[in-house]
Image (cartoon, rainbow, N blue to C red; front, side, top):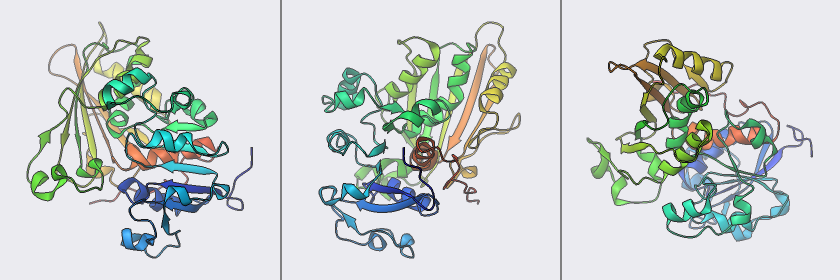
Length: 353
């Protein structure tokens, strides 16, 4: 494998660069010492300079947006794919074999193509490629991510939900059949396209549940929980909510303890699982994670609380949905794939207040 460095940077293309995740990828990769951005695509914005689409990036020397069909793949080593769900499979299947990929859509997250068809309403269009994809929850799958050609970047709700849950299931401390996830996201999670449900008057000064008992992230969460529990029939209660803020995500998860297990045991498991991790931090006992404390960063803050109901506990986790829930985790996976320090391009302090 070619040795990449600041002197010989990885040549990166961002497909779907005109969306929120594309903007975050550019923001992060502009300060990554081992990256040179060689192509940016935006089908409807093709021909426009980035400064016209994202004025906050005007000071930086970036390629003009182009169509995917016009990308010179001889000048690309790696692709971050930020295209809408359902449009990515055929595009990635058509990429040259030398190009490695991190896909931020849901198109390669579900290992079972029948499950994908059930939840996304159409057959998977790249089943052979799906069989090679690695689900890239970075702290859990480092070895697999490092060796992968194609990494399926986890969804934002699954990332926030799985980080506190997986160690506890792996250690046999909680019941897999009684997990309730109450999750909330900022409006940027809906993307940048104009949609009635994302208009200011539709979301400001209120909150609402959506995708109740039918959100597509539920099977993605269940897939990983089943892996941790050693079974394939895990089902959860998962309800997402939209909060009138730009970015941020919180998952409050209610779990039932195995016999003889205490909330202190859960804390010990999480401390062991994430000791030394750069981005996942267990807060001091009694401190509630807040979305404002991770804004603009790749951090995930988590904590565990004893419930007032005996035999139960409450897990709280927060991330920035555009960062650890999307572009930040994608860059973290990129770093793992090339053997770089995971913090390269990501050592940003959260914005506060």
